[in-house]
Amino acid sequence: MSPVKVLGSIFWVGAIDWNIRHFHGFTYSTHHGTTYNAYLIVDEQTALVDAVYGPFAGEMMERIREIIDPSKIDYVVANHVETDHSGAISEILKLAPQAKLVGTARCKEGLQKHYFGNWDFQVVKTGDEISLGERSLRFVEAPMLHWPDTMFTYIEKDALLLPSDAFGQHLATAKRFDDEVDEKTLMEEATKYYANILWPFSRLIIKKIDEIQKLGLKISMIAPSHGIIWRSNPTKIVEAYLRWAKGEAGRKVLVVYDTMWSSTEKMAKAIVESISSEGVEAMLFRLPFSDRGDIIGELLEAKGILVGSSTINNGVLPTVAPFLEEMQGLRPRNKIAAAFGSYGWGGGAVKTIEESLEKAGMDIVAPALTVKWVPDKNEIQKCYEFGKEFAKKVIAETE
Ligand code: FEO
Image (cartoon, protein in one colour):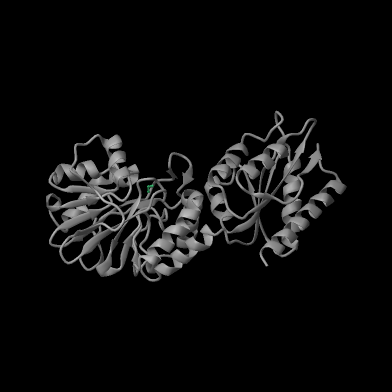
């Protein structure tokens, strides 16, 4: 349970949640667990930036105790209200009742409505600073990245940015830094994190990165509130965020479907094969066997998506509906899309799919492909042509 020195007298004192497999209720699968990162800055005065999820308060306290007596903490900075980072604040303030709680006005309101504590709260806004002695904490409000209360804390002396959830990943590991973990796993988790948590706020991300650059804040290290710390090349994740936020994508298509008696599945497989034959990467996912959060992660860097469903009760299968619902909430940018599916008599699934994809902001580039009952040889050929035409559009859009 040792703390980890980040640099100078700044320590990681967070907690590792090795076993969590579902986050935000059951909306986000965390195959690799997660961490709740808290950072202790020891100076003439001591600050704790972010805390951990309530059940992990003891683990954090043990780490803090290895460095200082927790009662000596002067400031508890809450970059974000959400309970995975604020759950342990009550425990800290019981031990350090003189400590000042620091956050945005919305953070104050949010913490009050979560914990009902009568705490000494200092509201801060962009540009405000708190001097700890040798080091100062500077604050940058970051509303909707990803909650209204969110702010970043910056330590100029070390060019260290503590950006709350931004740039995070759900990755439990005994290592704390990017150069200590497998790069592929790290980027996969960072990608999935952006897609599932931050995607709807892409325009704000572009603006925030621009604002930070204009403020002239030099950044040598980024220490988010989940996962590893970006110390070897923080530019890499910032550039990835800009790429994702702008909707830049590669020659990749996802085919996401579910099927009742295999007709839609036959269509899906023919479509995937034909897309692939055009030199475009194609990935096939059957709902609900494939994890929704993983599919959304894959979609981030894909140019196109084809969604298929058998028709039931004039609409999509109940296994497809939650995926379409989530697409509408995430509002992916710059994606092309189309629908396909089979039906027995009235049809209706493809109409529901098209409406949902349009609501999600996608560009429907081909009329839906439908097959009555079981696809025959000619209809399978049509699936090949459908996939080929879609692949050509992806190539044209990514040239
Ligand atoms: Fe990791 Fe928005 O809390």
